[in-house]
Length: 236
Image (cartoon, rainbow, N blue to C red):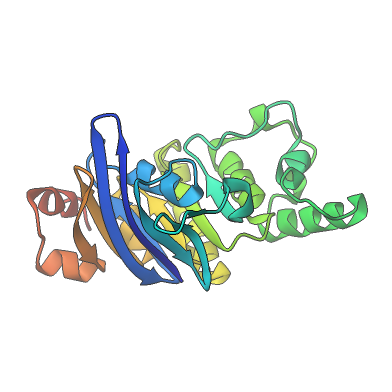
């Protein structure tokens, strides 16, 4: 279960968000500048909230009142940023294995091979990442995030960099994978089709505040703001 209750301030922008515990996928939607990526960064430990608590299972990642603030590298969170941020000087295999620590070379190689097989990209193992398509890059980025055995996943607009055809395929692939993995996941998106595909709860952020929380049916039946109404117009 991932639970978040944070206040954060960056320059003139303030974020105040409380998300009740969930072990499923939460899709974060909202206008540009609403605080979606900032919230991810708070969970990742890149941004330190001015006040708050972040719990993952039985562990506290952050509790400002007691001074608890687990370093980013010790939070064991998988992160797929926008544009994927793959290492261009490394092969696919080396990208995926980069974050695996504390095991010998043979074990690391076996773990990487298993992930590449599982995500149907074993044939790309020795390819240089600049030669990959958008969909291939997305799968490699996900494999790299999963390689550390994360306790939760953070995906920042995972389909935004893809063309329409690749977006449909990757969206369905991601939805299937996230359901199979079964760990808490936060997905930032501007796309109603992502919300429909991931089938989790939806958290609406506007101007740094949570304005609505519920599943897609609940948003449809009682949209809380004009933004939600406009967003839902893109639904099938």
